Image 1: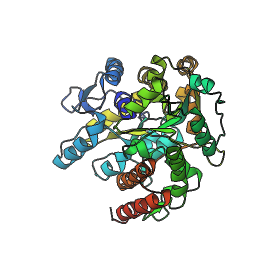
Image 2: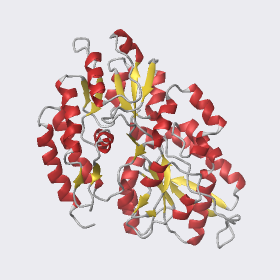
Image 3: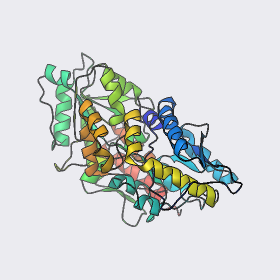
Image 4: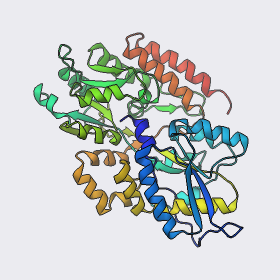
Length: 422
């Protein structure tokens, strides 16, 4: 399962917060208020969502939730943008976190600062990902993190010790080399080589750990001119040793299939991949991402439910729906059914989540990583910055550029995008 597939199937239903004093909603005509939700889910997530909505209807007779939209999450930005331009848009839409800054420029997006403030206590990365220019412009919808999944069998066969928390990127490269058997078709690790966001987001923890940032102070240039070179040197070392499997297709399916077939020793990934790894019968262990400093650092990829203003009645009904979904009792049902991480510590502490944790080896590593996780900036130029970084990573992976040359070209393209007024 690729990450986008997981996101389409795990749209995150823990949203918002209680609306004080809100009684049964009714339309001005006396009938139920209809809330149109463009959910973006595939069948797996839709089934869980259908069950939750049915329960909501049983206790909220004045509100009807209309699950529609007709598109999966990948196409949501294009559809929402067109809807806003036409003036006919839903009440709630699932919007990827990296797209929120673009959508939130519309005055039709509802400020939900009070909703999130009164919520279940979202993890810091989740809240940061929905904040644009100091205002909360959406409600956290999905939360994940990156860690390293290791094939214990390959480690044992090569006599390589399993890594532990606090390991370094030098350790990672050395371990990947030991696990690699070119003649046997086994690689130490893997990296998406399409240049898209799946290629890019894996390098940000390195840059943050080195003291860099995605966008520099002042917002008119990148914040990783030096740190990016050092991060790309890790990529170069893996490629030079032929210890990294390069997945040329969008979605990283080949990379994960190779891991699940026993041909890759370790892969940085998120909790969305655990069901497929378990189904493949891989004896696995999960460890935190390595770092340069020895301090824990990872990335989280929150996505959002964004609320639009179709009048007070519908906004209030949508808030009521999100309030109900925010309760940890609903959150844990979603997490269990669709594979998401809990959006708050309150959900994490529920017996139902603790039972799931006990049944899923390594799952706590992903949750614990949220304590040190950071998120990508909510900035309208981020897609252009990401594209420039993706090009640099692929060039180094393929041996077409040195880290310094790749970063120089990356900086030129990214800085050109950042100086454009938005």
